[in-house]
Picture 1 (cartoon, rainbow, N blue to C red):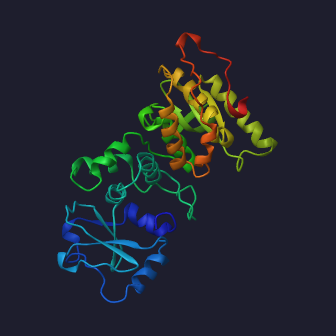
Picture 2 (picture 1 turned 180 degrees about the vertical axis):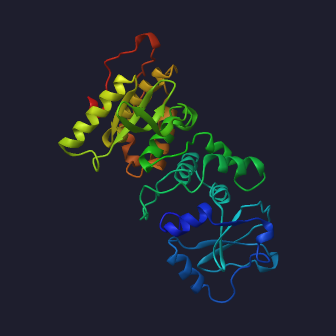
Picture 3 (picture 1 turned 90 degrees about the vertical axis):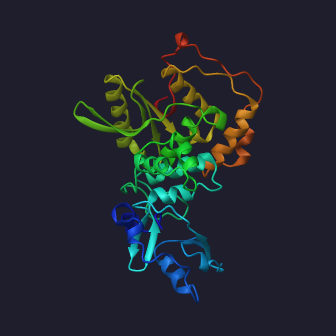
Amino acid sequence: MLRNNRHARQMLKDGAQMGLEGFPCGFGVPSGRCDPLVERLRSLGARTEPYDIVYTDPKLRHQKIRLAAHRWNGPYPDGSVVRFSRSLYGCSAPVLYCQLQRGAPLARSVLLAYELCGTYAGGENSTLGSGLEAVTTLDALRSFAEAHPDFSGARKALKALAFVGNGAASAMEAGASTVICLPVRYGGFGLPVPALNFRMDLENRTIFIDLFWPDARIGIEYDSRTWHVGQHKFEQDSQRRNMSRAAGIELITVTKPEVQSVQAFEDIAEYIAKRLGKRVRKKSAEFYEKHAKVRAEVFPFWRNEASSQMKDADPVIEYDLADEDDGHVFGASA
């Protein structure tokens, strides 16, 4: 619903939120045929059957073909339920996020949090795209999970939220940040979480940097062919890089082919690690197996057959900060 219906998204963001006192005598499983409810959910943008619904009365436990009914035993914290219409209620974003932890790999959980805290809608069926208001914030998700550690999925949610930032504007930004920031033991590169769409006021111009590490004054700009085409855009990007360089900021332009390439993307991550003062260590074959799984979970265009790109037992260079090569340039800026 959030990915396909702007109204539902807005209702979840700032609609009528209620605690236990606002419940309409508890939630029951619909009686009779469930077709009207299913059609109502479809009209709101829900696409995948069976639909998951919750109930609070232990006497009403039963299953319907098009509905998967789950008993909610509580707790019912304030703000855990949102009213979408006179007779239709939904879980708030923190509750939804905790519930969706069940069976989700860590990388997928991180990506979901980026979407809820970002300004885009993901998923293959998304019709909303980008330029949206965030449904919730990282602080709201974390506060709920910390306040209710026994709530289903809360502990797993807190684990994933350690690698999330607010303000992602696209699935590609979120995916790149996920792979870069997940710990090495999970198949990521273990870098600190960057600021996303960081505002930088330069001389006569304000820019927003996709992924930015302020301490090292280095950032990543994703160059999508959809927007970065034509001579005029090329000149704008060149001017943007020159102005940033004059302000002491290094922008690394990353293209989709570089994201698709295991080696190229690792080179970029290791260069940023070096700028952040982090030592880059040799990675094992086990790491690259986990890395392939993370990529397949995060990037829809990356499939397991790309594992043929995986490096074998060849040695990986360990950088020394004293050996930094100022002439190493990546992406379109090359």
